[in-house]
Image (cartoon, rainbow, N blue to C red; front, side, top):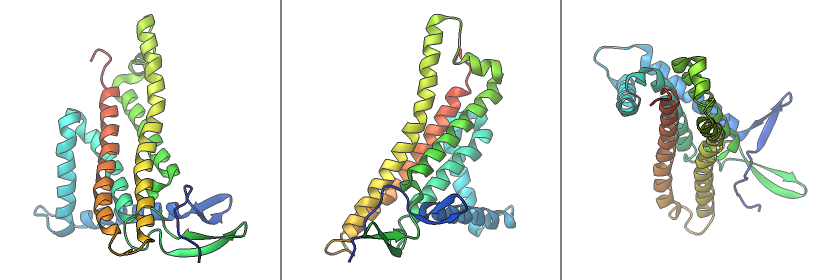
Length: 247
């Protein structure tokens, strides 16, 4: 019997024309559908005295709003939808990947004479493509907001200057902006992928129903912390890049 193990790259299930559909993409669609469905139900019948799902949604948004307002100040209303979207998408993606069946239900295929297990669903953030895409969206959103608040001239002035010292610092800033993609994506990917490997390894050994339990609690914490770190770093980058150079 073939051993179940976690592949570094997401496995392709089928193709739509030239586009390969991987198990992490299917999970991404599922997470997106859950979040959209939750938002629709929570806002379908809004009442002044919230109850049920609306109450849960308001608690989530209000708590995050209070957190962001301590950093963003009067820009909170603009930054909140973006930062909260990152947080809840990553959080739900991390937690969905911990549910039974995710990564363990699938089929076997033969590749070069070797029997390989292909899971139908896979944690979205254990795929580097997903985390890089999130990091790129974060970077583009940050620079768009910088242009919006500072204007094109003010934005360019943060990186280019006639003063040689400020010009050198600006070049370093440009390099730093590029490395943010690596920083955001690899931090999230590394922690989630490592947790997936750990749980898979623990689940295939003796006492498979007992040994993984402490690791599941650890991964619940890690999933929350990594979602919060990604969201807060995005927020801090937005605040810094939308401030005038003199600040």
